[in-house]
Image (cartoon, rainbow, N blue to C red; front, side, top):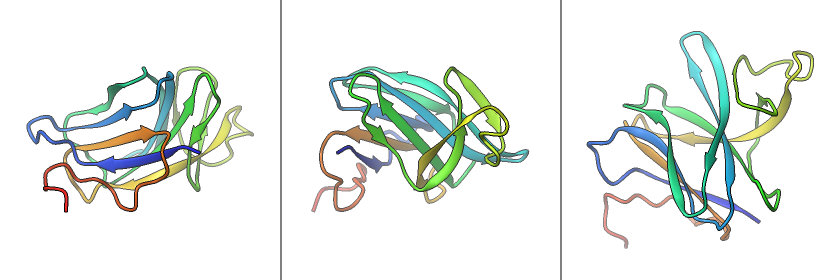
Length: 141
């Protein structure tokens, strides 16, 4: 039902990881990544309808980031096959194993290979998945 297309932010001066919500509903977003101390998941960022929110400020330090999002009104999800821990309220969790035993929930996150770019943007849409990610710094073909 929901699709997440990703593309590199058009302005290279603003290095960050952003999520843009093109739906008409509020979306809650969780992010996973590997830090020097191990796997981290954190959330919830609230991304209002037709707006963008920065999840990571500054140049990206990991090549792979993982995203899970839920539509606050319809219950729709943007998810994937990589299981990580989440909590009901705001959280920052170290480790992705034994979620239930540690009092957390488990959710399937979608992996994004940023190709070691310093900026990345994920666009949450209600449309069918695009055939390939949209890269904004090259003209459409």
